Amino acid sequence: MYVKAINIAKGEILVDRLLELYEEMLGTIDKNYKSKETLVTHYPMKGKLYAGDLMVIGRAVNGWRKETYWIPNEHNLDERRKYLQSLESSHNPIHECPLEWVKNRWAPQEKGSYSTKKSAFWRMIYKTMCNLDLKEDWTSKIIWSNLYKVAPAANKNPSSLLQKAQRDGCIQILKEEINRWRPRNILFLTGMDWAKPFIKEIVGFEIESTDCLEIVDGFGEFKHGEYSCRVIIAKHPQGKNEGKMNGEIKGLLSKDLQYLNDENREYWMDKV
Image 1 (spheres, rainbow, N blue to C red):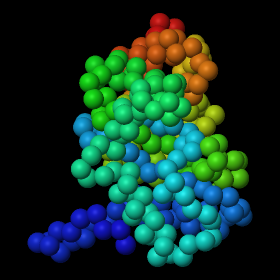
Image 2 (spheres, rainbow, N blue to C red):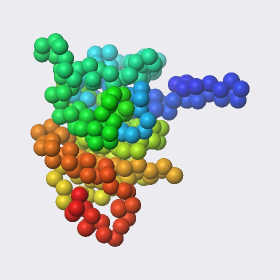
Image 3 (cartoon, rainbow, N blue to C red):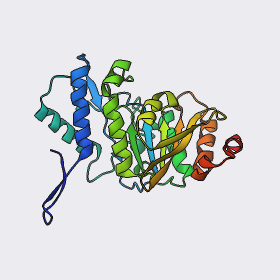
């Protein structure tokens, strides 16, 4: 059991459902992914100043921290639970911003070290936060997650087999992330081809294709009860025209979601 909080007065124990879902997903990978390659796991990272403005979703990590390394079928249940508890605490430390490293590596002093400023992914997030008038301390005001939580340690995207082994679990995790943190805007930097299996399976997504745009593939909203948010699905920014991409995303951030139900939607989309 992953205890999130204890209410002594009411005799209640709140269980961390997100960690439970991660445990189920890793167990499924153990059963269905017959490989001994070293894998890494990414856990969503919530900036310390996050106030609901933006959740960014990538495809999967391309290499990650050594402390997240693991090999399928080499851990028992107790070891897996310790691993996940360590994963959660390392990705969301209490006394510092989990995403401080993005700012610290924007212009690193050490020659040859990784620079987030050279990443089209992080540059596009920075530009989006500027469009939301949230430039100051921008890294601490977002949530960063990925469609696929597990990837090879060898700096590459998960194979089709690894994607299949974890997809059902990742779909449930993404649903839990959205309902837990309730962002006002969700930006997928994945392309529709990567996002579609998730969009189709999670009840609440209402997405329209943006055929008139070059880099944004879809626009719409996510609804769950009284909660709703704007959703933009763009291609992965690597190798794309970042000026055009930023313009398309900025235009959609300024649009009211009521246009999705407007009979003049085709006219509106032509004006984005």
